[in-house]
Length: 288
Image 1 (cartoon, rainbow, N blue to C red):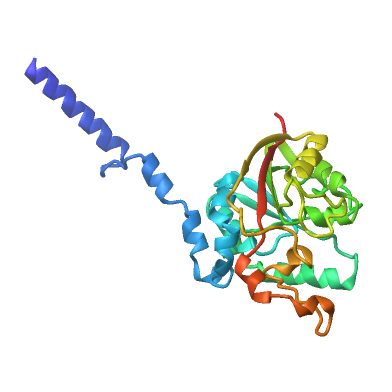
Image 2 (cartoon, rainbow, N blue to C red):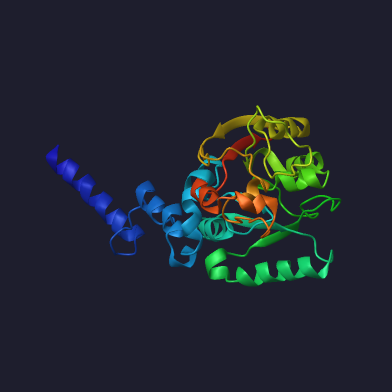
């Protein structure tokens, strides 16, 4: 029996050597080794190219926010009117098999916006870092976000923009178009300056603050399911009742004109100490 077993073992070894061309067989890549090859979000966020942006991480919490919105490897992610978040999201997706779609203003509206579009594309033209960024367009009456033939999104995110669409009377239309741009089961992530539910909501969003219930209603009317809210970007110091709305706080830190009544008792340092605004962080899903 022992000789028989040894003979079978020798045959197996010979067959393995033959299949591997006479050399040592390559072991299959383990799951741990495959994961190790991915670029972590932490490494992207701590890269020197984000040195200036990182100063605001304590208020914007990009790691926790992106993870909450399910932005990750292999995902196709669109961002409405992108800016500060691009240096975090685009490299992370590019290094991990994902796709980043920058949804800018439509071209040809006016010279000022065209220059902003051109500047953005120039800033993120390094494909080795940011990948091959895909572009789409969004503004009032600009039609579908994605052009014909563009693949729909796994995740769509927007940061501190809802009040702008309220001011332009197209907040509901915006959410409707977000719904159309997502795949079934896709995630819509919204961060916005938060107005307490006990306050009166200005329908034009004139102060920059918007109630969570208002945004949830916009999403529901568009067909979204509410998934969860997070206090990732909360700031309990912010009372949301400042003389120049949210723009009284950093980073804008708007000041009253010298010699005006508002300037007499205005305490700029007090507003600076509040920090950036209290923000709602809401996650919605397009039903499957």
